Length: 221
Image 1 (tube, rainbow, N blue to C red):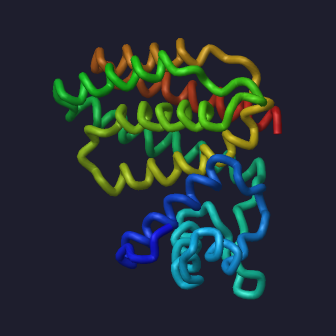
Image 2: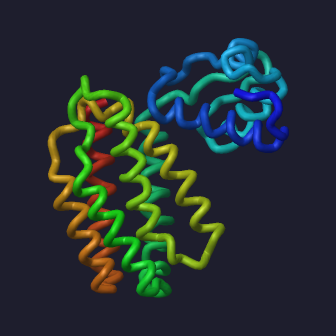
C-alpha cells in the first residue's frame, strides 16, 4: 500500500480493507489483531493501523482492551439476537420512509440491483471460491441498501449500515451451516412489495426475512 497517499485516504483505505477482511472471515472471532504485524503487512505505520482498528472498534467489529490490545469481536447468541432485533426495528422504519419518498430513479435502481442479485449465485457451498462468495455478499448488501436508499434520514441510514455489517459478520460464520432456503423468492417478494408501494406488506416480508435468518443462524451455531 503506497505510503505517498494522504494520511486521511491511507487511514480510510486501511480501515476498509480490515473491515472487508473481518467480514469475509479472514480472521477468526476473538482472534488477536497485532498492530505491528498488520502495519508490516499493509506497509504503513503502526499509527495508521491503530487508528483503523479504533474506528472498527467504534463500529463494533473489533474489541479494544487497554491491556491486551485489539481483537476481532466474539460471537454469542445474545449478541446476535440484539443485532437482528435492532436491525429489524431500524431497517423497517427506514424502509417505510424510503417507500414514501422514493422516486422513479430509485424504483429503477431497486429493479436493477434485484435483477443483478437474482443472476448471481448465492454462496451455499462451503468450498465455493471466496471471490464468488464476496461477489454475492456485495450485491446482496447493495440490494438491501438500495431498498432504503430513498430514506431522507441519514442518521437512520447510518445506523442501518452499521447493523448490517454486524449481522454480516455472523452470517459468514454460520453460512456453511445455514439450511437451504429460497432466497430468490424472498427477495422477489420483498422487491414486489416495495415497488407496489405497499409499506405494510414490505415491512412484513422484510421482518419475516430477518427472522428466518435469525432462526437459522441461532439454530445452527
